[in-house]
Length: 246
Image 1 (cartoon, rainbow, N blue to C red):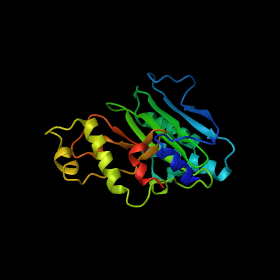
Image 2 (cartoon, rainbow, N blue to C red; image 1 turned 90 degrees about the vertical axis):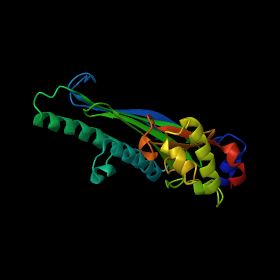
Image 3 (tube, helix red, strand yellow; image 1 turned 120 degrees about the vertical axis):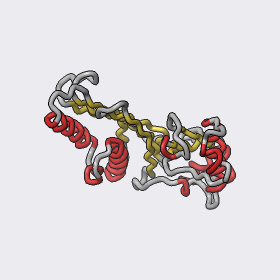
Image 4 (cartoon, one colour; image 1 turned 135 degrees about the horizontal axis):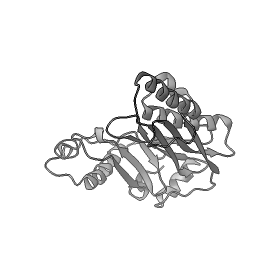
C-alpha cells in the first residue's frame, strides 16, 4: 500500500483512498473558571484529532507523539514528556499556581494554545502538523511547529525512506535549498547565502510532514547561519520528486 500511495503522489498530488476517519476534540485546563488571557490566571487549550477504527496501540502512539511535541514546546523535563495531554494541561496550571505563590503581586496570565491539523489521513499514512503558542511571561510568546507521521497499520514512524528510493537526499537537498533561497530572498547580509547554500552544504532537516501537494519542511529561526525574523516553511511538490518515488 505504501507503493500505491507513492505512485499516486508521483502524479502530482497525494490522494487518499481509503481515508481514515477522525473527529476533532478539544481539551482545556485553567487555573480558575472562565479564565481570560488578559487576567492573572492560566489556560491550556489543545484541539486535536481522534482517529476512528484504528488499533488502540496505534491511537496511543499518535497521542504520545503529539503530547511529546507539545511537552517540548512548554520546555518541560524529559520525565514529563511521556504524559498525556490532560496531564500536560494540569501540570501547566499547577506550575502557574506555584509561580504565583513564589512571586506575590504577579499580575500576568499564562496561556498555552495547541492546534493539531490533519494533513493526510489515509490507510498507509497519517501526517499531522502540531502548532503551539506559549506565553509564561516575558517580552513575547513562543511558537513551535512540528510534524507527526505515522503508519496507521502499526503505529511506527513514517519516514522519507519509505516513500523515496535510496539516493534521493542529494536531489531533495537541492530542491529544498532552491525553495528556501527564494523564500528568504537572500542578499549579501545573509550568512546562509555565502555559506551553506552557496557551498552546497545545505541539508534538509528532520522536521517534515506530508501534505497533499508535497513534502513540507519547517525551519526554525535558529537553524540558519544568521537569524531570520520568522520561521520558514518549504514545500517540495511530489511532481519534482517523481523520479525518486518507489
